[in-house]
Length: 497
Image (cartoon, rainbow, N blue to C red):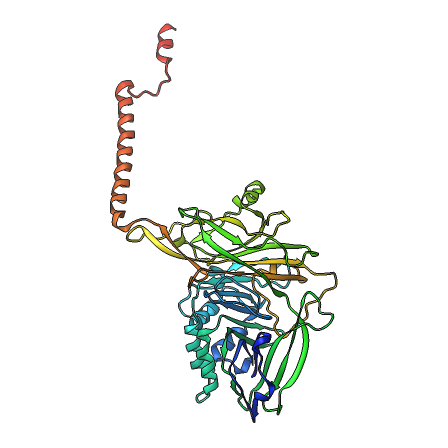
């Protein structure tokens, strides 16, 4: 097992190397205001038995969780996802894609998920578009990692390992979590990130684990490319180093901060065809000399959906400050009610249309959506949750630019598989009001159970009255004209012959 613990702080929040104490396999120092990342790399034999058996049927499995709490990014952790649990999965060619083992394991780790099997609950991704995309996708709103924290403490930590239990309990405060496995590496990487704040600088290392600790800050080495990030700081391998080693290096980064913000709201009145309005505080691309386009990536639970036919009208899109619908997952049934569907929902990638004025000013875009019919409820209203989208600029890098694996690379986010391998993503940060989160809580109209009896009785009465009316008209016609198999006018002709 290998641990990599990284503290990334602003220049003004530095720590003196002399204040760090390294004894045997531990490091201690003064508290530090920083972002903290903890990555654990495990071999298959170090995993719980049921998880090990599952991964033998998997070619690729990537779990991405993002908190519904608003937070600021710093350094290499600029990538954004709609809040909730995102699962990207490719089975082994010889394995059954509809195996229920994956969903059973997800429920055991994360709690009560609406997942039965990949065939029934997952949507397919377009692997024919780019080879680096996985085959299936699943999404579930998930506000916290409480169940995962308990699971890790019980099954991943050996008795008496206090450090492991502290790490597992600390997952409740993380803002993002990644789990990645592929058959090429045959290793599992689990990465958790905690937001910028007061971090306790006290780390102990297990004798059988390799633990690397980095305390880094932004830096700009000479000849830094636009797709790279530069850092400087101190690096220590516990159990091997007796003092921190200074480091200065740069690395390629697919994700960067666009230094702009957006807000998301639903226009009122809501109705059955709500409109999601995005307010963006800047219309200027981050790289003026590169080909950049602004996109919104939505993960919509099955209670709400986008109509690809409506979003195929160029004139309509232009009136909403939209350019084009670049991708929508399939299938999306436009008529089925929520309670008749098994798929998790749909993902949508829309290209936005910033104003073409020279002035960099705030602007809005509107995305038309549609509610599904939900199960009846008392009072005539139900509550649904719709996550905020991820907004980013996708910029093409120069010919020949490569993104080799970097220490903080983050891939398999869903939308990155819809772009080429040389795309650089500049993320627009969500901005909320007060303590509001990144999920829209909507009250939507449904059939009122208190009045459902009158509806069924009234419907039956109308059907019976309609049937009686039709019978009455048929009988009335029979009484007036009678019934005969002869054609009209035949009888008169026979008499004249």
